[in-house]
Length: 341
Image (cartoon, rainbow, N blue to C red):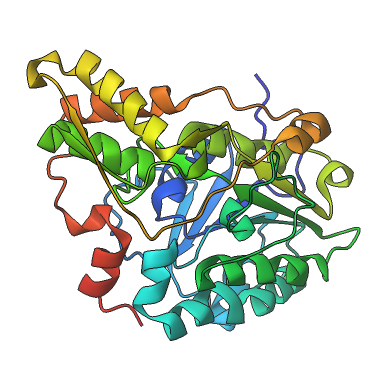
């Protein structure tokens, strides 16, 4: 079998934020595909989950705001996958000044540094939350960005900054992923599907805040499939493009019902799982359309929310999640514990 990494000017890929949730699943995936992987990360969540014995893996404890160090890390790199950010609204609001410097102020200098270092492809992970609240039946990539928090405001503001630097020898592409779910080596239990599953197993009760909000979801393995695909496609197919990436739009209340069903099947010894509804001030709601990415590059997610819940159940059963109270599973707690600044 020919490796996906073969035939590139270089098979070296740098992942900013590679120590985070998605990065912890993507890094071993790319290594297995034959890529050399450079993880550039502050390592807030430690390094124990990395396959450190792999000679194709390089770990750099670095700050993306340190443009000079980032540029040196990009030497010999063919593609950058930019995942690093202060992720999600509660984390951003913990220290808005810090978050702005990481999520926005340093972004264009990073892009410029990568291009100057000879990087040929820059893949930016934006977010579907840039749409804020929309009652449109289908939210496509052309839908106005109506951010309702600083997190999704700055995520959206970075997109045009990236495309300013699009060139024949520097392919730029933006992905607006749905809420990612499922098990990863550096797990997050502060995301909708994951936290509902954790509560169902540990408390035998699911608390739903609101419930009518519409949220798009994407299995973490599908997210990794997409990044791997974006590394293999000809530049002209993706240059200057923005893609929604989601599997299914579901109401939060319906997600809870799926979680209850699967957990009761996987852990019958727990007995009935209770669902409790409570009011919420989180009004984000949007029905994301992902037709463009399917038609343009043939990307179709293969895994469902139910699959993500089953994966999490298996991880619990196998002892891979020893304590749901550990700070490392929660971004805000970890940022406080490490005194991020």
